[in-house]
Image (cartoon, rainbow, N blue to C red; front, top):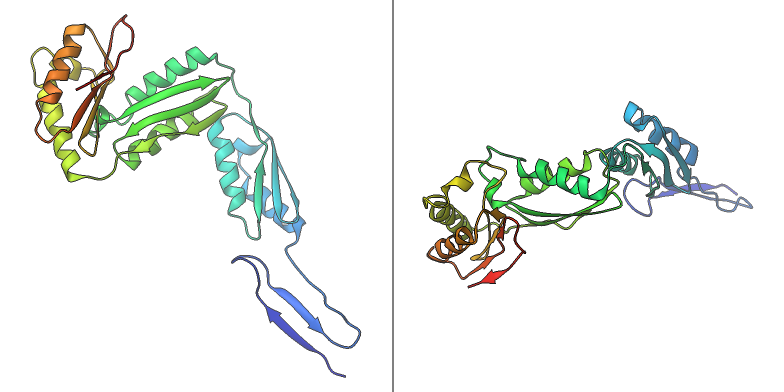
Length: 261
């Protein structure tokens, strides 16, 4: 009796075709992705000095990454490169971030300083309000970014900073809104244009942060006196179209407070 071959693609895009062979006494044979070939492809993708101490093993199409890198960004990049190799079904990233060990308080303060000056000159610095938490080198970045580019830049800055072992991204991006953009500009003029407060516009790293989401305004940052905080609150509430103002400004040497009006 003769025999025939039936080629049928199954599974997800990118997976190899399954070859079904039908014939007398021949049964069914399958040919799938070759783990050794996948491993070779992954290691080729990791042929960079940043990954010199990274190893890859493959079992049933799943890649296991182990070893060490100097920066957390390299761990993320290695993961992305492995995921994009042909026939890879999944990646288990067990790479450890070596590099320097920085105590949590120092790391948080250094990151806060770097983030304060991030994207200066793009016109959105005053409208970004990030929060930073650090525990055993793992950084949790939160708050609200003016746009996707501001968020991406902040995340990249943290991922590439020596001493960061992990990054948890809790940053929200303010929704696109012409009304909110109008309020942002009006708030900036009302606050920074007031003689008592225009000193906070001099240093881009120390502005009064103005976050606007759906007409709701949040002020954050650090001011010199309680009087400055109170005036900022009054000026923020004077802008037309604002639904609510939450005043999270802190006074130098004071206890953090939250004021809603």
